[in-house]
Length: 45
Length: 382
Image (cartoon, rainbow over all chains, first blue to last red; front, side, top):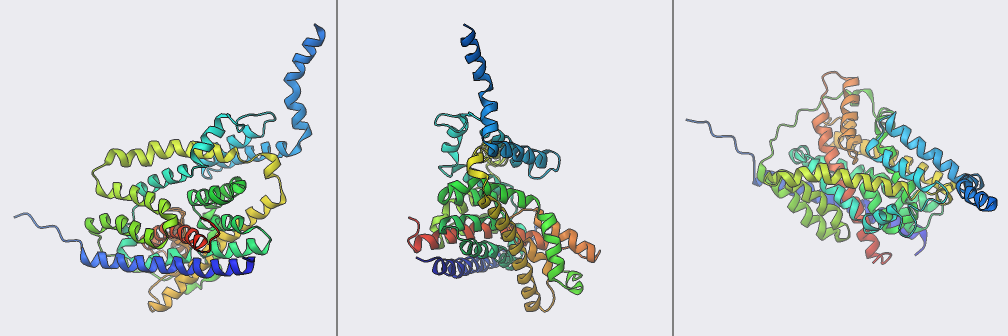
């Protein structure tokens, strides 16, 4: 594979893959935050 | 008898003769002292630069056999660098030390961690344009991860001949983040943008979320980029131990004893790869320049992503936090906080920047993992 093809492929797949992966992870984190919200501590009677 | 004495004495001066014969060793001895000076006097990553500097001096003493077949540093190198074990052990410690709470409280800052990795890929292109072979270009680009263990992991795998230059560049520039980043941040932002006050991160994060985070990230990351799973898994294992709170001894050992011993061995081994004949080349200087470019490009892309988020959020985001989307944790976040305060005393960017910085920590590992998987996908590595 020539250097130009290699470089462009790495740029597109690498940068795109990194952004996509982190975006999916941020969505999952958002979902986890909504599914398991911090519950306020119960006040002692 | 006189001849025997002269021969015996000549054995004591042969080292000096060899030093005079190969000027590159002499230069590397000076480089070794330079690294020690940076670590001891300037407090630049002393935990790494001190053993690296000492290893560099050791290996450049003529006739030194520390890196020969049974040399003591060769044994350490073969056990921990050639097998890629040391960076992974360091990652367990990093995971145990890192609080991902800020990024969990504001998951959108994960994207700043992605932008902070663009320098890797842009530098890879530059290295290719300068004529470096493909796998060497990958190793040079990874300096832009701004993450020593990741750089060592990738370089020891694909371009071990560049390990010394890449590691020194990665760790040196990491410690220079407070000097490198602020001018770029000022250049790319307006006064109004820099003065923006961001609302405090209010959302608390539950223990369940903090426990599920390392597990979900490991599985998801492993599915997307299996080649980088060891990197991701070790950092997440350390974090799971920390957040679980039930293995305090293991957590403490990971972030102290294990990390300290491995750091010592790692530093010595890397220093010992800096032998004059292999290191004193124009190529090394080019790698150091490209590494510098990589970190500058990370900052540029991070700040630009911050500007995009500012537009999308209707002006609520201070783009300076984008500069924290690199792996130098928590140094980059502190730089952002300091810079923000310089322009507006009422601006407290630290927690937002910590989110971006934690995102950068994961981002650098994900970028390396994605890179390895793309290389495997293209059939360049197995």
